[in-house]
Each structure stands twice: as structure tokens, then as C-alpha cells.
Length: 608
Image (cartoon, rainbow, N blue to C red; front, side, top):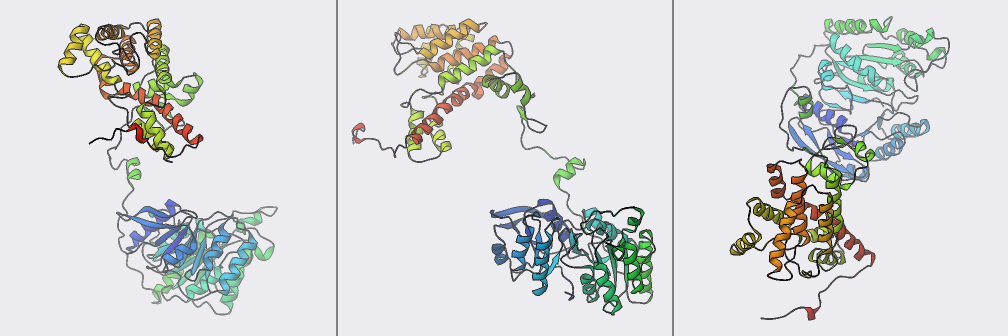
């Protein structure tokens, strides 16, 4: 493996299996280091394509998303690092696919638990093709001031504390990603910081070894000393021992193998990593530390003395003139995410939407403050839900029952009315459910089903002003306005609308007052004296009775009643009800597999 450094300020990566936080941390690190281009060239999400929005400093950027590794590599030929966030189940296959791409040079495998047989195949392929595998079970690696993999080095605060925004003089390699974060800080306290750091991963068979990276560091001129943190288990450290003995490493190495406490246990102990388990004396931390020391590495007497050993080695190199400590620079301020800033109380941000009827932020959604579980447990019906979401209060049962009756009576009125006709024609044109439904709903208005609000508005105004039916009707006639809620194409005075009779009967039985309905009946009596088809229709019945519901319940002020009528609540009831029928007509036509509708010529009057 040997060769030199793996990354630079122009290195770009492909990120497999989209994870917003580690990608954003990479981009924030880029900005902190003053990179001109983002280090993430593209994202690979199997089966998905498009873009993902992320921040590069203060600028929002769109990173391409590709569905396959091959497509991503073709689109970004200069991206030579593959960061694999796949699960242990698919990490090996996706990593091998990446290694086989000619543009990919380094593969970092984050997942733990990758089968050892698969890992061995990856290692063999990588070595025979001069490629590098970092991991599995790794957090990745970092070149200070240039490039980092995923979550390496943790938060921005930790990166700044570890002076990772600019290169130092120390090459660092460890098995542990968590301990790497600790050592970055330790090294920054007593040296000018790291130049490059790698966590090889804690599995039994890492894709690259401690000695692989130490030998590589030895070839990087900017690296003046190396720090190695090993652990008990396995024999990886002995390859470094051999390299030291053979003189392949010419720069100072400060090393410590953790796990010396294992001897305190009576039986063999498995530590955090899969490979952190001593298989005999040779694999113990004590034996490894002694071997490294005998080979010429600087090995402290304990982990507590590790920092001092690093400091003394660095100072010795400074005194010898081999290191000129890096001048400190001030990194730029990373813009804080709005949500984070709001939570910390640093900024105030206006909301864009106000909602008073429902809340989904808790353990369960609430309608007007009533938890969903209560709605179900108390046996609430559709009328009760409408009372909560539309009127923001729990209306008496007779009110919600009346709402449900209105919905049932207005759900459909046959296939010939304009709304149903439009829906049927649209469904037969092969359109989807929503398109068919909307085509029918768009016919609702003053001439079809949309007169409930107007009926309520005019009946209320006339009654409240004390107008007689004669004064009301004749006054509307002089204005050229038809009385909403009066008149029907089919029904007559001797053939009343059954729906109107049902609603009136229910109201007279259950409502405390029906003054507006009775006024509408008086108006009907007058209009019938003019023409037999000027009967109170279902719009007029619902409009007048809803006024009685609102006024008689005692739960609404006069201003609230006026607002409900003005906003269009009552037409909303017809829209809701008729949607049921229109959906039914859509399903009916599709179930019957009806062909495209064409209106017959004989039903059209062609004229000049």
C-alpha cells in the first residue's frame, strides 16, 4: 500500500446511502477549511434520482442523487473516494461494486458486522488493484484543512478544538473512531495538530492496517511524527513492529496499545470492537506495548502518560529544527442552522403558517385540543370530528347528528346532475380518482349545490331585519336576484323534496328553536303562490336550519355566526357530502370499464 497521502483540498467523494447529517458535516468542514468546491460530488441512493439540498457555508446547494454506483461514477469521474453508509447486509456488495470502478481509489466502509469472508475478498481485490479500503466498522479519516469522511472528528466544536481546520505535523492512526476524536484534541493541545488521521476500524480484519498508514505517513513530507493508538486483540501491531525493526519507518513513532486492564479480569473479556479480544499473551496490550518499545517506538508507561510522550517528542523535533510549528489561523464562523439557533434562543424567526384546529407535535394528533385516542374511545362520529375541525368546539349530539344527516342526504343525487356528469365523463376519459373528483367539484357554485351559504345569508338578513316574506321576495326581485334556496327543476308544491321533509322533521324534534326554518317555509308559501316549482330546496333547508343550529345551540356569538356564513362553511358541508357520491361515480365507471364518452349529435342543436 505505502505510497503517499490519500486526500487533498480538491478531493471529492461519492456518498452511498443518503444520510443528511454526516454529509452536512463534511460540507461544513469544507467551508471551515476554505475549500472552493464541496467535497461531496454526488449521492447514491439505489432506486432514486434527483437532488438533495444542503448548505455549503451560507449558500444552499443541490447535490445530485444517482440510482446506481455506475451512473454516479460516470457523472463524477474526478470523485475518487467512495463513502459507504450501507448497512452490514449490503456494505460488502456495494463496496466491491465501487472498487471495480476505475475512478474509485479509496473506499470507506462505515458499517459494523460485515461478514469476515466478505471483508477478506474486499481486501484481496483492493490490494491487487492498488486501492485502499478503510474499515469496516470505521468512522473514517481526515486530512486537516482539506477533507474528511462523514462523521470523522465529530462536531464543528470538536474540529475547532482539535485545530483540524488547518494541517499540522502529526500523522495519526487508530483502530477506534471514538478514541480518534479524543486523540485529535490531545494532539492539538501539545503539538501543532495532525496532518492526517485515520481510524482503520475495530473489526478482526481491517481493510488497511496500522502499519499500512504509518508507512504511508512516512512518505508524506509534511508529516514529521506519527502517533499510533492500538488495542489488545489481533496481531496488527506486530506488522508495525517489523517495519520499525527493518528501518522502513524513519520518523518518530509514539504508540500506545490500550487494553492493559484486561489482565485484571479472571476470564477473557470481549471489549467494544470485534477484534478487541486477546487470543493469548502475544495479543495482550502489555506484550504489544513492549514489542513496540523494543522496536524503537516511544511507548509511555500508561495511557495517562501518552499525552506527555507526544508532547516531548514534538518538542524534541522543534528543538532539532525538524518542525516549524504551524502558525495559528482563525477559522471562519460556520453559519448556524435556523432550527438550532431558535432552540438555543439566539434568534427569533416568524412562522409561516398559523393553525388553530389541529396539532400533530405530541404523542398523538389532536383535533381542537382533543386527542385522537379520546375521539375513538368516546365513540365520536364524523359529525363530531367536523365540529372540532370546522367549528373548534364539541357541539351537542343533536348538532353533530344533523351534520351527519346532511352529509348522507347530500352525498349523491344521481348521475345526471352537472357534478356527477362531469366526474363520469372524466373517469371515462381514463383520468385518475383525484382528477375525476375535482372535475365534478368544480361545477359546485351558485347554480349547483353552492347556494347554501347564500340561502343562509339572505334568510338571516331578512329575518333579522323583520322583513315579511312579501317584502323579502319582492325586494330580491327588484335587485334582479333569485332567492337562493328556493326553486327546483323537478320538485313541485305537490311533490316536495323528501330530503327537505326529513331535515325539517329532525329539526322540529331536536332543535330548541327553528325560527329561521319557519321563516324559510313562510317564504316558500309566498313563492309557491307565484309558481309551483318555487319550493324550498335542500340548499334552502340546510341553510336555514344551520342558522337555527348555530343560534339555538348557544355556543356561537352573533359575530361568529355571521363569519361562519360569510366564510363558506355551509357550502363546505355540501362539498364534503357530494365528494362521497362523486368518488362513487368514479369507481362505478372504472368498475364497469366504460369507454370514452362522446355526446350524441342528436342531442346538440347545431345553429348559426
